Image 1 (cartoon, rainbow, N blue to C red):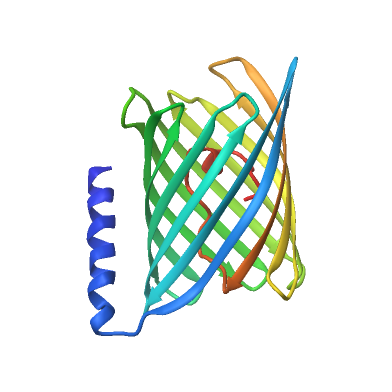
Image 2: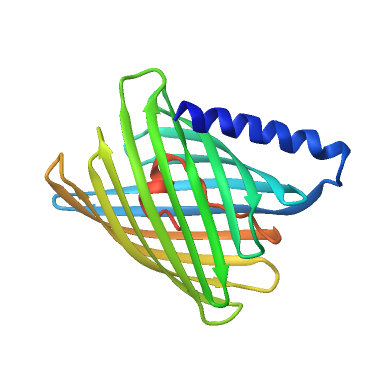
Length: 235
C-alpha cells in the first residue's frame, strides 16, 4: 500500500508537471446533498451528507478532488477529503489511484487504493479496492466493491452494487438503485440495500436519497471515504 500511495503522489506530480506542455481543461464538477436511513432490529438511524467534487484533465491524465461532511443522528460529524490521480487508458476505460482522509469522533483515518471506471454503450462498471487504516487509532480494514449501471436513455438508469470489507470491519453490503438526470445537470438518485455486520451479528436495511447538480461532464469517480465505499449513500 505504501507503493500505491507513492505512485499516486508521483502520478499527481507528473500530471502537475505537464501543465507547461499541455493545456489544463475543466472536465466537470458535482455538488450534492443526501440522506440515509439504517433500519435494523430494535433501532433506526438517520444520516445526512453533503459534498462536492471537481475534476481537471491534462490530456489523458487528470486530477479529481472530493470533499464531504456526514452528520449522524447520534451526534458524530465526519468531514472527509480525497484526491484521485486519473489516467484515461482508452475512451471507454479510466484507471485511478486514490488517497483520502476522514475524521471520526476526533480520530483520523486514511483510505488508499486503486479504481477503474468503464463505459460502453448503455453499460457502465466501476470497481475499487481501498485500504482503510487509522492514523490516530489502531484500525485496519480492506474494502472491495463493484457497481454496474445500465442506462435506458440519457435520463434514466439502474445500478447494482456489492461491497465487502475485512479486517476490523467485517461487513458485507449489496443493493440496487436508480437515477434520473435532467439535461440541465440536476440529478436524483435512490438506493436500497442491506448490510450484514458479521462481527456484530447484526443486519441492517439501508435506504438512501441523493439530490445534486453536475457541471460539465461531471466527475469520473465516486468518493472513497469508508461509508461511501461500503454502503449505498446514493452512489
